Structure formats: structure tokens, C-alpha cells
Amino acid sequence: MTALDFTPAPGAAPLPRMVLAQAGAEVRAILRNGEQLLLTLIIPVLLLTGFSLAPLIDIGGGSRVDFLAPGVLALAVMSTAFTGQAIATGFERRYGVLKRLGATPLSRAGLMLAKTLAVLAVEALQVVVIVAVALALGWRPQGSFLGAALLVLLGTAAFSGLGLLMAGVLRAEATLAAANLVYLVLLGAGGVVFPLSKFPEGLRSALELLPISALTGGLRAVLRDGAALPLGALAVLAVWAVLTLGLASRTFRWE
Amino acid sequence: MDSPAVEIIDLVKRYGATTAIDGLTLSAARGAVTAILGPNGAGKTSTIEICEGFRRADAGTVRVLGADPRAHALRPRVGVMLQAGGVPPAMRCGEWLRLVSRFYASPLDPQALLVRLGLAEHARTPYRRLSGGQQQRLSLAAAVVGRPELVFLDEPTAGLDPQARHGCWDLVGDLRAAGVSVVLTTHHMDEAERLSDHVVIIDRGQVVAEGSPAQLTGAERQLRFRARPGLALEELLNALPDGSAAKESPAGHYILEGQVGPELLATVTAWCAAEGVTADDLRIERRTLEDVFLELTGRELR
Figure 1 (tube, each protein chain N blue to C red):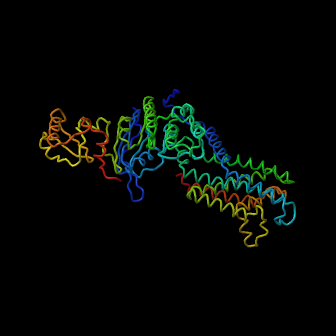
Figure 2: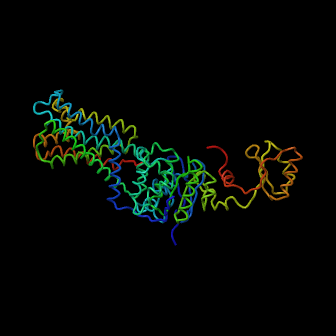
């Protein structure tokens, strides 16, 4: 038996160490989860290769991969920041994990920071894989890297807000169902693979206000059309981020 | 000198129309083991979760190590074991303990703690595949890994087999020896009697008795025996000195209280001989905490 000295020596670890430890655990949890991996990597890569190689959709002229790559990048951001995070957080709440972590020196702000870092780390991995596949398929990205990065960051904030809003209020099973449903609806109606121009005029202007359409449209404007900063898309994402994060912070139930 | 580990004055907690805690006052000393004992629904978990900062009191004062229980500054000083759950199901046992240890400045070695609690060979097992007892032990380990001053254990031995229960008791003993204050809830009388310096019995959200196990059980002794059910105890009582009491509880188990000595023993055995009753398992002993508990909280099931 190992001698253990239980003499009290209380003290919190430095915040960066706590946040990195928690973020590391979150990343491992995401990568270990098969369904999450399906959502974050396999589906985006399949959509990208499938629709790039086969003429299944009418994108109205131009290279198919140039149209699809920005949409699939947006989908990847949504799957990790929204769907994956909503489901994981909903179940953490249900299993009392959030409650238990609340009894450690890791503050709620620290926990949220760790979750954000984990989401960004997984997104970085997704971007590397998707960009590599797209380049192999003949993608020729244009525009500024910074513009695209800003869109991804704001998109992450908006989708995280939406995911946490759902996870903090609904039962875990309801979050699971709703997050998957919203994912499918936004995949279909957000310009990811089907151009918004195919929808009727009135519906289209409404759909353009969705966060996924703003992210897809913004990334396409930068990476395909070489725009500097798509202000309209950035504004839509910023409004979604402020609204959902603000609402989530008011309504989130930790237990 | 120091404020108590826990000080609760006139605590009230309501859930809708139900009053779970109804003017509860108790104090847990530093460096001592305090057991909160009570039947299901007595308010044990509500009380402890208010002390842990998870729930808000509706009225009354609660101080933990002299501070507001919700203060973030308390988190490193207080270790918490929830009654159930709190660990992601897919997280490996060792991974969870290492993660929790990294939130503290000078934690115990997670590996040594796993060995101590008999979990070392399950270090790579996901939480959901651990047995109930192993899950409990992992929660216990996580409560102490940060080297806290005060530990709250909510039913620490629920679902443990006898070996693991003794392991848990040994750990609580070591915590106490190291100067850690421990507050635990239980409905195992033997656990409270064995582990604690101070026992608080609560029922319907109020303290019904408190003291050391010895104070609660008193010096009073009892004579107990088993025989066929339904003996006519009135006759026996007539033969006994005034102030004696006799009862059958449960059926076939007889308890006599009063001046328990050679005379009483002789009277009882003579009466049994006259009645043709064979008294089994006849013994003289102190009241147990269980007797006190049942006396105070009643026998009906809830």
C-alpha cells in the first residue's frame, strides 16, 4: 500500500492549467465518440467528395468543388460547435458532470473557455482534413485567410450559443433529437450543398438570415469570389452570437 | 479560534409546497467526523447540497469553514462526493481522477489513490463499465484528491460490499487522523456509530437528537432474548421491579429495560421456566444507535 498524506493542503491550480486539462479531456471525449466523429469528419468529407465528383446538383455554373468546399467547411463548424457541443453538454448536465465540476476549483467561466478551446481544436482538425481533400479534388481557394478565419470564429460563437441554449434548457434526450433535426434542416436549407438560389424568392431572403447561410455565404464570398470582408454575413453571425449566448447565459441550468 | 467546519442556523428549504428542511440547526466541528443520520426524505441530501453550494437556502444561515457556502474561494478547500453520478460515462476511471487532480495546487498522487482504493486495475475502464461499488470508490477518491480541509460524503458506502465498506471506513479514519473535517450522511447506524465523533439525527427536516454515539445510546442497558412470539409480558412485568419496561419488537424478539442486573436475569429465567418458554440468544447489552433512531423516527415505512 502506498503511503498517502491526507494532511490538508488546499489550493487551486493556476487557471491555464485547469482550462487546458479540461479542454484536453473534452477533445479526447469528442474524438473517442464514434457518432461525433461521423458528424464532424465523415459526413462532411463524404458530401464534399460525392457532390464534387458526381454531377448531382446544379450549382449554376463554375467549379463544383469551389462551390462545395466553403459550404462543407461551414457544415463542419456547425457540426462541432452546435450539434456535437449541444448533445455532449446536454448529457453532461444529465449525468451530473457539470454539477460535479462545479464543486472543483474550475470556475464556470473556465469550463466554458475549455469547451470553446476544445471546439476550436476539433475544428482545426476538421479544416485540415477538409482542405486537404478539397485541394486533392482541385479546389482553388481565393480571398483572405483572415476574413475566412473571422467568419469561422463568429460562426463558432453563434453555433455554440445555439447549442448551449438548447443543452441548458431541454432534457438530454430532447437535445439529442432537436440538435440532430436542426442539423439536418440547416444542412438542407442553409446553402451548404444546395444553392439558396434554387429556393423561391420570399423564402430565400428568410433563409439567408440563418446562421448556417450566413457562414456558408460568407465563406463562399471570400474563398470562391475573393471578397475581403463580407460584412452582411459577419453582421448576421454577430447578431446570432450575441442573442444566443446572451439567452443561454440567462437560461442555462447546470443541473 | 477557528470557525466550525459547518455551522447551520435555522435553515429552511422548500421545493414548491414541500418543506424539505424546516428550521434545522447544527454544527460540525473541525477535525471531527460528523454523521447526519436520518430516514429517506429526512432532508439529509438537501442539507449537504446547500453546504456544498449547489442549492440556495430559503431562510437561515449556513457557513462552511466560516464562509458563504457558494463562495468560489471554498472550492479548493472542500471535497465533494455526490450521492451518484457526476462522471462522464465514457471517461476512463484513471483519466477522471487525473483530470480532477489537475484542478488543485498540490493534489495527492492519483495513481497511489487508485491503488489505495483498489481501483488500480480498473484505471483504463470507462466509468459506465465499473460496478456500482467501484463507481462509489472513484467518487470518493475524487472528493479527497485535492487535499481538502473539509470533505462532504453523501452516503459514501451505499452499494458497497463489506470489504469496500471497510475500505471506505479506513479512509475516513485516515482523513480524520490527518486533521480533515468530514461530514457524511448515512442511514447505516453501524457506520455512524463506528466512524463519527458526533451524530446528528434528523427527521422531517429537523434535528431530533444529536451527540456522540455514546451520549445518544446512553449508559442504559437492555436484556434481550428471542422466544416464540406473543408471550404475555404483563405477568412478567408484575414480577419485575418498578420502572422496568418490556416489549416485543419485532415479533419473537423481546427487550427488557430497567435495572438490568443479576436479579432481573434470575426473574426472567424463572418466569421463562414457569411458562415453558425457551429463551434463545439471551444477552445483556447497551442500546444501539438503531434503537435510538427507530425510537425517534418511528418504524413506519416511507
